[in-house]
Image (cartoon, rainbow, N blue to C red):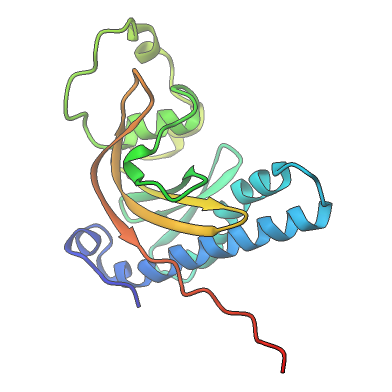
Length: 204
């Protein structure tokens, strides 16, 4: 079983210990499915892997967390996210190599993912630079976010993963989105540990 920290226990209560195992296991299964898909289509690019991992991460977390009594699946932007009590869990592959989670950066400052972080992430720790972003702030958020209660808070599950190396690093916590450069500013993050890799049996 994974190590349960004070933050995890305060956030998820009795479910925290199970989550420290279920979330990493789900992401590893998502990687394995995506790798199998790439091998199946035999393309020279990694499109099949990337698209497959994006879809599978949501599906595997939904299935893996379904056994938790408080788990409530919610369909948002065509994907199913799991809400546990007052928290919604959102997976984010932030890198294709093993770099710190503090390097996490969104591709876009608009859209569902960015709106989710702005509306349900923590309050910004500092005022944003005035870079002419008032127009962005005034835009209507993604309509699917109206399905989430305003009291629901976001827990990001950020992970580094590649087809060759698999899941290398997983961290979860809360972060704000810095609009001027799209970096995530973490208020709290801590590591989750992927399950040990199974070695292929040696032939006699």
